[in-house]
Length: 259
Image (cartoon, rainbow, N blue to C red; front, side, top):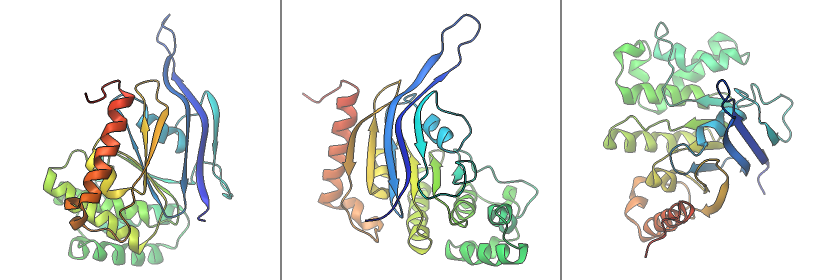
């Protein structure tokens, strides 16, 4: 069985209140795990704490209760994951190649080695001829691909926070395909926050459903669509069944069961 790379156990978190206002609970006993090489989705209603959970894992904040474990890691949580937020966060003064190689350099790779690996990865996602371009010279979809390459190159688990939400439907589907192919080439454990049910089913091996705020896991859905996975699976009866099961659990968690 693949090794568990991340485990949250009974994690709680509250945002401080302003003035005399009481703290605002965001997470309530959140428990989940991510294993080596698997993609795990995290879905739930807006405001349920999905993005907050990623920030806690990335050490951008600390839980107010519970524990976050990174079994086998010699690092603290800080630096144990790569994190792609909702925006691509590319540095505007660095080329696509230099943005893609950035995290490798931060983690100690020689610049020549980092640039060689980044160039190979950019070519694998169809951006080899755009390596010298600045972010302002790239389309939104190209920028997302550069950000994905940057996140995948270090040999670390990846945190993705609604990375494709701002893209149009066709571009989003294309980038999801790039992500799957990149994951096949560079297998990484991924924790993916998304509001898109179809995206969760298409990309993930397992999906955790969260309750309304304060968020906690109320159900886990296994996505048995096999790998490698291509766009053809979206029209299958298996995909439709997994999508229906996931929607059913989301509605149940929100108290909106179908009649």
